[in-house]
Length: 358
Ligand code: ADP
Ligand code: MG
Image (cartoon, rainbow, N blue to C red; front, side):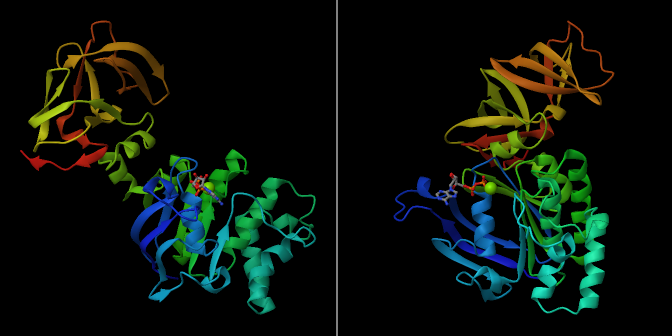
């Protein structure tokens, strides 16, 4: 297993990139700790596969270095990096049986047949294919073939890292949950460094100790699920994580006060002069409807989602979301909203401003 260092890394698919916009992966410095489970989360096209393929060696970066522990592997081919990678779509040998497909990475490394048999049995159990070991891969459905690909990715214990690129896309929803649980179990048991790419926040938050959020070729935040929820460092993290995402409302900020269309809102921290586009960010969980306190709001619609209600409301010309308890009364007299000041974040040009304790 290895610690993976990304040093000054960037990648452009163009031969002569001129500006930052030409980079699919913008400059990045980061150390992936040995043995941690990471999720790489972001919308389609934000550069997740580009980054993963640079780590695995399928792609040579146009700038910077990758180290596995202290060894520079930037120019080493995939085979030399001793990693396992699972892709979005199955990669299996059609003419081989399920058993031989699963055994392949071990036999390839010259493992004893007794070890191969034991390990294949174990993995087959994890992916729910024990009863199919003697079937040829040809003729199996995409979802079963993908389970074989996952199994092949997990079969070796001595890899530097396990990389997964949206591996559950073709798997049916129930099995998704089951396989994710198995991956998590594998991680707890063997402590491989794992990087799991997904565009699905639930998948990322349930799988990973740390989530790396990407937006537009850039890593915008690396944090625990709790950090991403409580203190999104970029408005994108606020929108993308949470359902609904964080409310972002344009404001002016002066000291420990925000002004929305001239109406004052107290803040828990103090801020110096802010440049550029300034906004406050508050999660729907920290907003509360009221009949007597707070700023004016107009309820547009209430969605009952089981455990709580989502209120969609108009607030100074912006749509905001407020989360209320399942049994909370939402009356016609509730025309005000309060925000918990400790949970109001301030953003300048989309980046969080720390502020100072008041
Ligand atoms: P993700 O995996 O997050 O969906 P990708 O890393 O695949 O994103 O793509 C990032 C950006 O790089 C996208 O704009 C995509 O169109 C572009 N891109 C990806 N692969 C290539 C390629 N082989 N050649 C040129 N552009 C590419
Ligand atoms: Mg991708």
